[in-house]
Image (tube, rainbow, N blue to C red; front, side, top):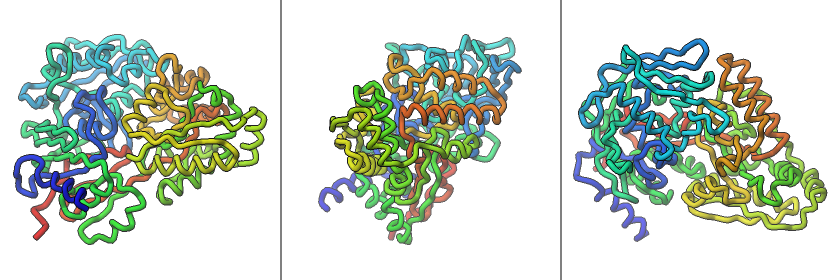
Length: 519
C-alpha cells in the first residue's frame, strides 16, 4: 500500500500545475523509446508519435487509405508512378511552411541506410518483396513524384502503415551530427517535456490546420481539444488501475481482461471495446536443431488447442485465428479459419517419429503483457501433456523484443501489432533469416505469392493468393497462429470523444476532459 501511494504521487507532482480540464492523462504500459519516427519505436512509442507527426496519407477507420498531408494523389495505370500534391496550409511546429522539398528530404532520409529506419526494406527492394523506390523528386508544378522500379498496388498502404510512421519532418529535427534532436512535425500536438520513466507531455499546436473531413481512424480532422496531453508511464497494472479509480488517470488502454467485469461496476468509469488487428502467435526458431525438423513443429501445432488458449488468454473475449490475415480484414475468408487440428495423439506420434527424447525447449514470454504470459502458460501445459519438456523463460518486454529481432529464442509467446493489409503482415514474417533474423518463415514460394499480390489491384485475386499463402503456412508450420486480440479501454466519466479502433493505437485528438469532477 505504501509503495502504491508513493507511485500515485507521481500523478499529482508530474509537470506544472494546470487546471484539471486542461490536461488529458492516458496511461502507457512502458516508456517510449525516443522520438525518431520509425527508428526508435514500439507500440507505446507509436501512440505518442502519431500525435506529433503526420504522413502524406493515412488509414481511416475502415482501413482505407486517405490523403492526410497530401491534398491529392495520382497513380499511373501501371502502378509505378505516384504523385502527391500538398495541402497549401501546412505548418511545422516551428512555424515554417511545409514544402515539397521537406517531403523529399524526409523520404530520402528514411531511405538512407544510416538512418536505421525499421521499414526501409519495404521500399528499397532489398527484401525481395515490397516496393522499390527508384527516385523521389519534385516535378515542374510542385508535385512530389515517387518512381517505382516495379508495380505496387499496396504502395499507399505501406505509406499509411501505423508501425513505421512515414513522418514528414522539418530538417531541424536532426542535429548536425546526424543524430535525432527535438521532434518538429506537423501534427496537432508538439512535444513539451519528456521525463524518462515518468511521463511524456504534449501541448496543443495552435498553428495546426486540420483536414475538412470528419475524423476517422488516423485520417480526417485531427482537432486537438485538450490543451495538454500527458502520457503517464505506468508499467504496473495495479498502479494504473488505482490511478484510474482515483481520477489521476483519465484513460487506461488495454485493460487486463480479467479486470474488465470489475471496472464495469465502477460508477465513474465506462469501458470501450474493439476487435484488433493484432495477431498473437507461438514463434518457433526454425533454425534450432530441434525445430528445424518439420515433424517437431507439426507435433507442437497438433498439441495446441488454439480455441482453448484463446479463451484462457483473453477471458473468452477474443476469437481464435490461425491465419496472418486478421478475421476483421476484408481479405479474411473461410479458408483462413482452417489450421492444424488439435490432435494430441498425432503430436505424440510425430515426436516419436522425429526421435524426440526429452530435449528441453525454452518458451520465452514476459509479464508486461498479461495475455502473452497467460498464452505461454497455457501452451506450455499443452506441450508438456504430449511429453515435451518445455520451460518458461520470463524476461522483460524490452529483452524479449530485442531477442525477437536477433532471433535469440527457441519458442516465443509473441504478438504482432496490427497491420492493415495482408501483404504487410506477410512482409513482416516472410524472408531469409540471413537477411534479417526477425523473419520467421523462409519460403521462396510464399515470397513469390506475396510479391504477386503486391502487384494486383483486384481484391478478389488478392484474396485467392492470400488463401494459397495460408495453405503453405499450414503445410510448413513456421509459426502457430493463435488469435486476434480484443481490447477494452477504461475511461473516466467526463472524458468525451474517446473511441478505440482496430489498430490498438489510442487517438486523443477530438477528445477532451470536462472540468474537475472530484469534490
